[in-house]
Image 1 (cartoon, rainbow over the protein chains, first blue to last red):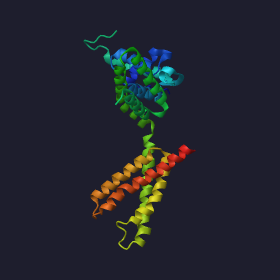
Image 2: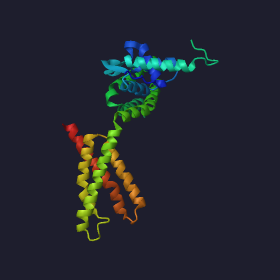
Image 3: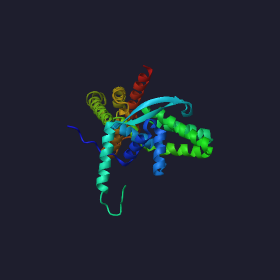
Image 4: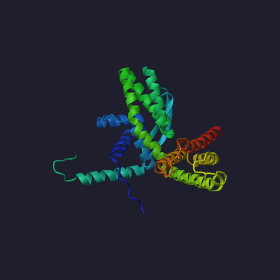
Length: 110
Length: 186
């Protein structure tokens, strides 16, 4: 029997959406910038990595190491991408939000 | 403090906080964003941003380290080691010290001297199984010594109290240091 995917926490949700949006260019810097641009919040790189690490340990995303570059002091990037389990969790979370917000007076979602 | 020195210290703190598996990527991300900000804006604003990032990242990164360390297993090893220390102390006090000490061995340095090497060994093996188990074991020993000195029926001499606080945790840390040295040497 297929187990029901778990719902995501709010930061997990935001980080996962940023990872999808960035596609093959999702790594710490770009994920942090994407969230900062969308939310207006100056989120710390540590908080982004803590969330990415939690998502990875839950098996919702995968990571791989990129090439080192000079502007990073010769350090390699770590790229993230969502997998099928992550997609299920995202869908589940979205369903919950849609169900809970449906029919609320004064709130109109597109 | 100069700007460079502040950055150097912040980088050192950040690399200590970062989980080893993510250290390189984290430091690289921080360097990349800093370099972008320093090139497009003011250098002092970039330094401020860097220091603020390091401070704001401390708690989340510590949390990742703790959760990745497998603390349940560490606590389990520490508890087993603590029981082993208790058994050794009991045997030493009952079978060895009591037969040599004329005053019944209540506050006898012989007990500490005999117990020290086995506790070093316990610290060694605890670290071998779980790298952080020695820290937990030492904390448990300090806690139990505090409880015992507060609620002890007999009045302990000051030297005994101080020695009691120092000897056990020191032995554990010594064993842990031996293990770490050996692991790094091989």
